[in-house]
Length: 189
Image 1 (cartoon, rainbow, N blue to C red):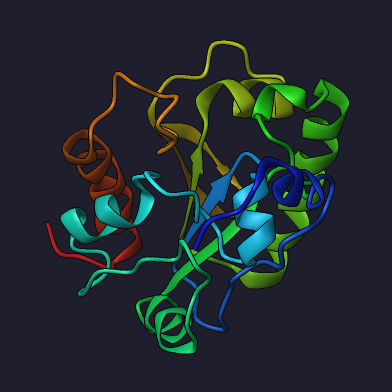
Image 2 (cartoon, helix red, strand yellow; image 1 turned 180 degrees about the horizontal axis):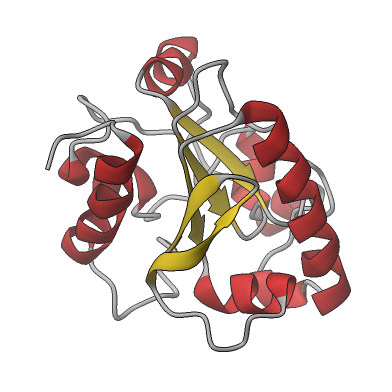
């Protein structure tokens, strides 16, 4: 599947529903949907995004998932059965995360608190350290497990899987995601 630039632009500001099942143990939080994600309705769907290969490498999922043309019911069910959920700090789709305002991210932090209260995951893994710092006003936050919880859930900051985050590889992303997944009880240490 491919889209023209104009087709992708038509999805600007669209929202993508959260993917969170009733027994979510590990909630991944992206920054916001990209235009490809909005076009397909599948989180982290842009071709070349390393999220699902990293989940597979970490042992979080047991088979490959390719959402570039949208996510199948079987793929959604697999994530939910594994206890994995996905949401975003900001709801609206943009071409790049830097199009979001600090205010939008701060509003997203409050929205995330509500989601975490309502779904009670063991671990929340925010995939975007700079966006987290802005959203929560914690300028010194560093990658890894945080010293505080978020609405009772362990809080982790993990690298964003976008190809724009060039110093990360699928292997380094998988290692970071695996640490959070061990804490969530999805994979064993």
